[in-house]
Every structure is written in C-alpha cells, then in structure tokens.
Amino acid sequence: MSLKGNLETVMELKSSPEKFFTVWKTQAHHIPNHTPDNIHAVDMHEGDWETEGSIKIWRYSVDGKQEVFKEKVVVDEEKNTVGLIGLEGDVMTKYKLFNPTYHLTPKGGGSLARLIIEYEKLDENIPVPDKYMDFMISITRDIDESLAKA
Image (cartoon, rainbow, N blue to C red; front, side, top):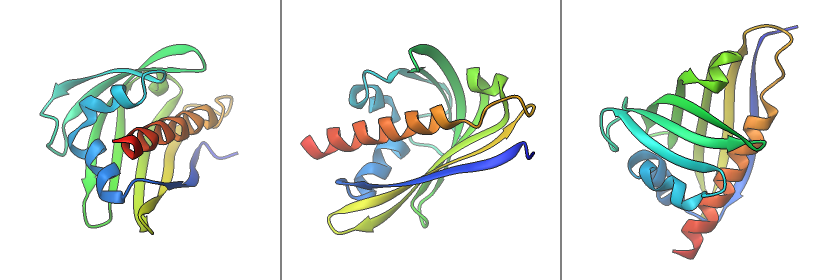
C-alpha cells in the first residue's frame, strides 16, 4: 500500500479565475470573511500578503475540531495555480507531505477549479485525507458564493 497519493476534484465556479485567484494570491487575510464557519483566522508569519513564498498560519475547523496549518504559498500566474506547501500544524502530525493546490481555468463567465491535495502519510494506518478535501471543497464554495454576491 502506497503512502503517497493525490486527491483531486473539479468544481464549477461562478467567479472568474482572475477574481478567485486574486483572493488567494493577494487577499488571503480576507478569506475568513468569506468562510466564517470554516476558517477562523489567518496570520502572517513571514513576508507579506502579496509576496510569493510568504508564510501564513491558518486557524480553522474540520469535523468540529479546531486545527492550525502553517504554509508557504507558491503562485504560478501563467498556469493560474496557487499552491500551499504544508510546513507545520495539526495535519503535519499525520502527513509527511501535505500540499493543497488550486488550478483555475476560464469557463464561460466563471471558471473550473481543479482542487488537488498531494500527500504522503506517515504510516499506512493514517487515512487518506478525504476530510481535508471535503474542507477544501467547502471553503472553495464559500469563497465563490461570497465573490458572486460582491
């Protein structure tokens, strides 16, 4: 049984890739306003809100449990991708590697969002991170709905 894997799903969004991408790239500090039930706070640990490689600390709830995730953001503007490289936090107690990525492509007036979680479990008894993919889908839906109202 492999300890490494990828989870992936595709969602249709009302938001354009540029609009959704901008939130993650330069306005991450506003994400808790879009997703108050899921993400409680995001703090800058190193860098600034607009610079690739900046390190943020997220406080959020998954399955009713509060968790913390420290990540470094990686942006590829040509490919419209935003990746979060997991550095520390609750999820890193189960996974040696945990890197969520958003890849956006235009579709009509909105976009298709490909959500990917690349992971490596610390041992075979650790579950596949399905609950984190469900969380990623939920916050993506929340952000998209909030942007559609704006």
